[in-house]
Image (cartoon, rainbow, N blue to C red):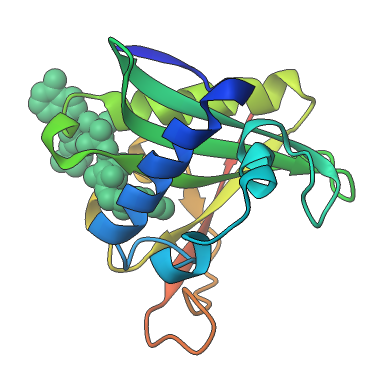
Length: 167
Ligand SMILES: CC(C)(COP(=O)(O)OP(=O)(O)OC[C@H]1O[C@@H](n2cnc3c(N)ncnc32)[C@H](O)[C@@H]1OP(=O)(O)O)[C@@H](O)C(=O)NCCC(=O)NCCS
């Protein structure tokens, strides 16, 4: 299993993985399958490089690649308005690949990328419905900021904002 950055030409495989994540774990993310399934092709480039996003900045997605099959993903983004704060999201590992340390390796890959891009902190929002993810982030050094906003607009689900220092 290799953790690596996804490449531009692989956007369709990345799209398929992300849509599968939204279907398999609908209460883990701030977005829904129905909101992303019809996104135009060029919007998927954002996940690769940050190009074409509403907020200017850089982004990348790390995938867990097993012989060409993508088994997990995690995305990092840094927006120009706040260059010292990176964001981690879209973290998902296929159910059959879980509990082998892939999630932790994906987090560390995004943290390393963020550090190299000058960020000093990495934040995320974890669904309060996802205890596996909350435990993973705690082990990876993230601490709760005490904020519990709704996971999605008008949702009964909440999430917890967590932050980790990168230096
Ligand atoms: C959260 C998620 C990404 C974790 O992925 P993962 O690959 O299972 O993560 P890890 O393997 O690094 O850690 C998970 C557990 O496996 C354990 N583990 C890791 N390697 C292991 C090994 N070789 N043998 C046994 N257990 C192992 C870890 O200690 C951890 O245990 P814990 O939960 O009791 O603390 C995954 O469960 C997932 O995709 N969930 C649904 C989507 C989601 O919630 N995403 C987060 C959005 S914010």
